[in-house]
Image 1 (cartoon, rainbow, N blue to C red):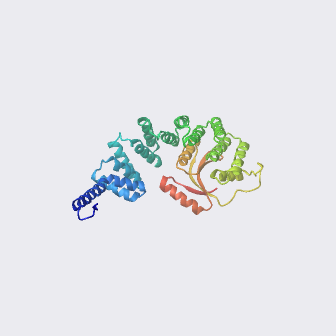
Image 2 (cartoon, rainbow, N blue to C red):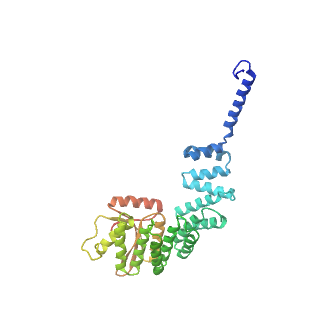
Image 3 (tube, rainbow, N blue to C red):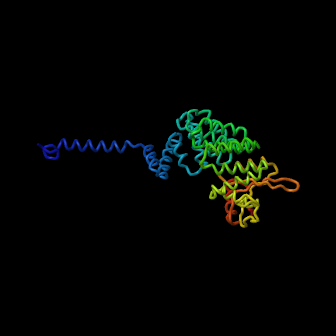
Length: 346
């Protein structure tokens, strides 16, 4: 038997080497620039992936894949928006068009263009009936409506989300949004009932302390201070480390209630500061700004101050131990959201 490597088989040996070389060359050439970029993206090497997609975009400015991933990888939000808008104008029927439109809507919501954002979400729902983003679009559409004070429209979309997507992770948030819409319309009885249904049906939900605090605000607005104080005590007892629990403790202290629900001689704690970003004579205007700030993720409350000649509704953001800490956050708030501020002692 003659070995493949024996002098008796030189022709076959050379043929095998040539075949192997051709196969290796073909394999190396089979990876397209797009596949290389996708591979980098999937491995989490986003910087290199962005460079590869940028090169693709230079060669073909209309390439849908390069436009899509450049928008996903672009750190500059305005440039990402431009990529998404170009993608939609050139490739409206692409299977990723709903994701791109959702990204555009989220950008507009984040910068406070709520009317524009609402139109984007409405377009997504209208043009992409089978999109997996329908529940998300409904939630943010409702939140956009709430941010501009259109509480009736917001309630419609929040209800649709709860009805059609009850198992979605945003369903509980939609129920909270519905409560806020009712509260904004001063439908306190309906909002109170909705709070109680939430607490009964969604026991242990992460939003429970938030809903409890809303219930407190409703009771306070209806003039039932004893019931409101009882809810504050429940928050302090069950959720002491949450933002709502800490706010509840502060309010109880301000009211002079001890743990037993009776008047206390304890004085309000000194040294707490907050950022005031609004003072309104119309309650509805205060509620609008409060909802807007909450949609941005800020911890915010509206304080009613009854004067001799008029009543003001103050919008407070956060609670800080020192004035310097509050000032740093206030400057950031003004820089990012364009809101004038005043740092005050609580």
